[in-house]
Image (tube, rainbow, N blue to C red; front, side, top):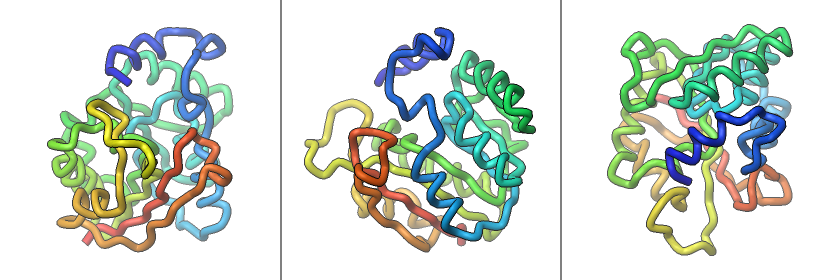
Length: 202
């Protein structure tokens, strides 16, 4: 999906948006992860926060929840959605590659869902470095990362991500605590399988 597609998508009223369900609901993988694991609430930044549903879900668990997206209309929708639910969330309209340095070292957790697969291969290492900079010492990266081993590598996003590719992106900054496949039957976020990854900053 092109950058212009995202801008056009979020300009619509939410009830009229036609597109991936992943953008219009909380991640089922995140719901399951927080329900089944005793995660100490802390500050979390959601990269590519879209309509804010994952940010809001973290907030409902007592996290100091923040989201960043480069589309102004997405931020407007997110703020409205959080207000409707009476949740204290913080949203920033910024490009992750030009993120204000005020965010560096600020977060206990960084979370993303299907964001890395949108990044050009030659920018992935830079992304891994940025995620590390956002985290406090000992912080953790949690990612729901797209995988479709039966789909040939496309020339444009979303790209496929193997375990090897994911490890190479983050290897200089993190050690992998866990990485496992969420099959489509357990991951109705999309038509593709996804990896759920948890990594600790070294």
